[in-house]
Length: 143
Ligand SMILES: [Cu+2]
Image (cartoon, rainbow, N blue to C red; front, top):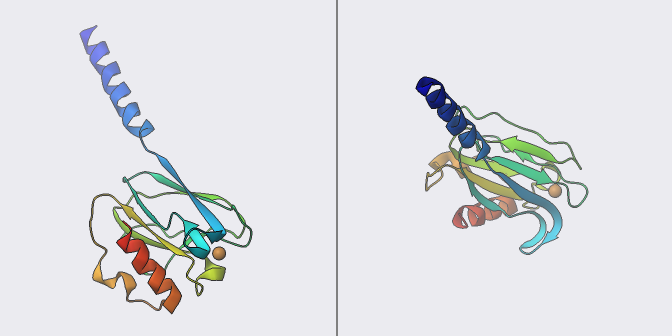
């Protein structure tokens, strides 16, 4: 009997842990508080295993992982234009995310997963349009 109770308690604790994973909303907007063509918020810190939901608040946007701006082992993702997507981020580190049609206009954001305080040196070393690089830097500073 005692053994059964202990097993049940362990199951409840395990389920409780999974239920604590959170979902964070990010809007894809033509115009936000920080300018035109933005993810809002543009900086987000979440826990390992949390989910980011990209919401197509305005038309013509998508959310996808930026090449070379993901932690090792993280799965790339590509959302379709005008579609809401949810991405669960399971590798700790920094994720650069872009809207493909508006990358050159700086429609990007950064999600930091876990406790790491600074992005790797390589994070901004790829081919990134000037405006996108500025917004990535602002997003990193906003974490
Ligand atoms: Cu866009």
